Length: 487
Ligand SMILES: Cc1ncc(COP(=O)(O)O)c(C=O)c1O
Image 1 (cartoon, protein in one colour):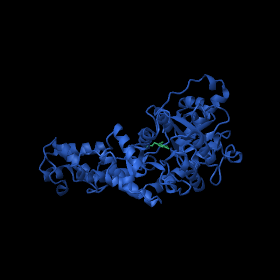
Image 2 (tube, helix red, strand yellow):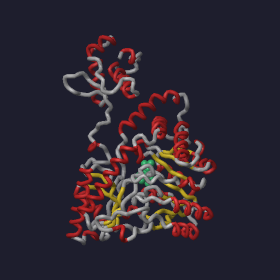
Image 3 (tube, helix red, strand yellow):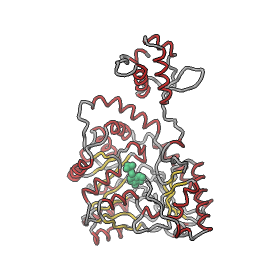
């Protein structure tokens, strides 16, 4: 232990704090293994030639931060502090105790993400002599992302990658470069609400192209499973809108679409790219949910069909939204324009996050097996609960992603979202996913919670639906919900 600690006592701050900091780093980078007993306070104090109080205070600090077990009797053992009570984590239960299904997001792939940060810290010193500004992204991360695309069948070099602070940041950069006032942006309808907000904020007008309704037989109340590829997209309507309305860009979610969970077939991808080519509309594809391929569809990235496609990626759903790391992949000429736009907003991303992200992207699939397995279970649980408790609702079975798009028998989505918190649940009303007040007949329900909480959530929806059924006038008299955060 003394050898590992080395010259820990620099005099830079209180000795107990320095000792604790060094032990923490040793645990984080794996040089002190997990679940090993540290020397007793007395023995370490003697060996290091410090007072016992110093070691006691250092151990107490480590215990408080979760790096040492607090078991009685035995000596303190090393651990990582990721075992927080899940109910305390933001995004699962809001501070007021309300279950949060307005966010379709998951906790971190715990140990994997933590370890990536620990490794990143050991790589950091090599970058400290630089200025720390890198508007395109740290080279190792750009290389890792490029290799990830290449492995997925889209040959890509690091010079085609711009690292961003998440997919939403990426979209804003693209909108500011390609769209703006007097311009139009084609969108799937429904689509991801924060994208609609970003398009509005850019001053562009949306051109919504409806996703075809699932055929009647596929939306049977209570068991609305959908076989095969489902109804997909209306490529003819998309291309017609491009020809007639000349949108500057299209923002599309072909890979486990949020909120429906649909996936665009290769046939439709090929046709869309071919027919969009002459229209002047840049196809921008958000692949944030691409890794959440619950049915093992194995989608081909849209960029495989044309180098002109602009792709947005993110680690938010595959690994953790707290990384705030995403990217844009585009042809080099266009990428240079995105970089110029980016520097009007910020001058680069934080370095440690990017180093951690590089580790995660290099070993992209490592945490996904367990994550997909849990999500598959949650999906089945939610579909079963909906069929059992809300048989008058119908739904399309999502092929991947995080959410079920439910069709309601009446235009009551906003009223349900307003009532739900009374029953301990927050949900995003259907109209958030569309323009012009559409989708009052729809509600998005994520399957991001474990079974017990999903049961509570569905029972809360049942109770809210019962309240509405008993007093239908509530649908008109309830106040619109505030535009609360959703993802
Ligand atoms: C389709 C889609 N795009 C983008 C985002 C936001 O991603 P990020 O956290 O990388 O900004 C989400 C998150 O819900 C999403 O579902």
